[in-house]
Image (cartoon, helix red, strand yellow):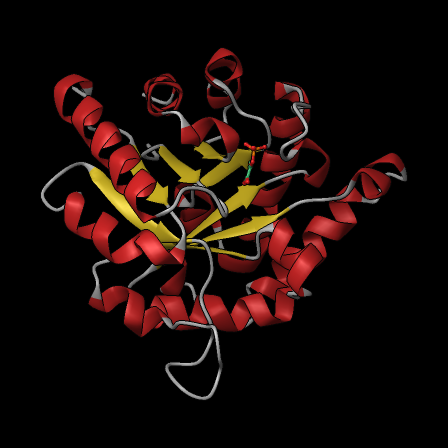
Length: 254
Ligand code: PEP
């Protein structure tokens, strides 16, 4: 039985005061209303708010994730931060290879494999994002694209290290667009991803790895998506910026 996971990606939203207010609101709702411990909850604010968010959730069921990391431990990489720095402030997760990082910052799957390696070495769980563009789906290349992203992104990651990896399937055409993959479309890709993991790492790992769906998940569609056999929760963008919507999505996962 895989434990479901719901992660909120705040992207570049909320200043420090607003971030603290939203974390405090989420923390309060989770403390008062979250009665089932089957689901893991992760919130990924901007880098600016990570340290204070991690302090605010100490001792609660909410964990904090970064939206990116650099692959090196330290060095002359202006504007970046490392897995070691994140673990020193009790950040437990990191989104790696989000499509916006790939699109606007030219991140490649090969680079993602180094970032995952670095995260894993610090005990940080990687939420590794894969997914096709609209053009790739319309030309029926989506399976090929995702297979390449998995092969390159997980290159050099050992079977043991896979216990610190979660995969997120995020069709680029569904991110922030209001268009959601149908539950059948999502399930089909999730089953494909699980089969790829089995091919590379064997059945024990493919049975336990969590595969999240991301792309315009809302309280109204989360239940149906999360009830699919191979969908183990969600990576939530826009809807994670409203505490009540985010919490309803979490409840749909338990
Ligand atoms: C995301 O940013 O990972 C995402 C899925 O965004 P949204 O839910 O807004 O589509």
